[in-house]
Image (tube, rainbow, N blue to C red; front, side, top):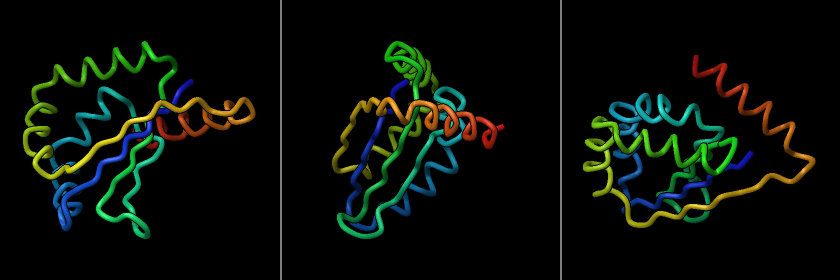
Length: 117
């Protein structure tokens, strides 16, 4: 299992606008293709105007397949046209959990699935 960490930095003051847009137009679409995130956080202290998302995938191929489906969805593409104007930078990391954390990560993923239902 892998976790994709995505960090977006917004122009000052644009984080709230992104949040409203995401919840109104993109959250359901993204979760339909990627499943529920295992983390979604806005910065409060330190670098501001950031959101970090965490998505779990069984394999890297699983990630590629789910993201390909997402990027074929016209609703997602329409959201991106609006959201990209708010984003200044984006970082993406693929994280491999420590061996002792694999079972806990599976539990977190299952809990996220249960909340998304």
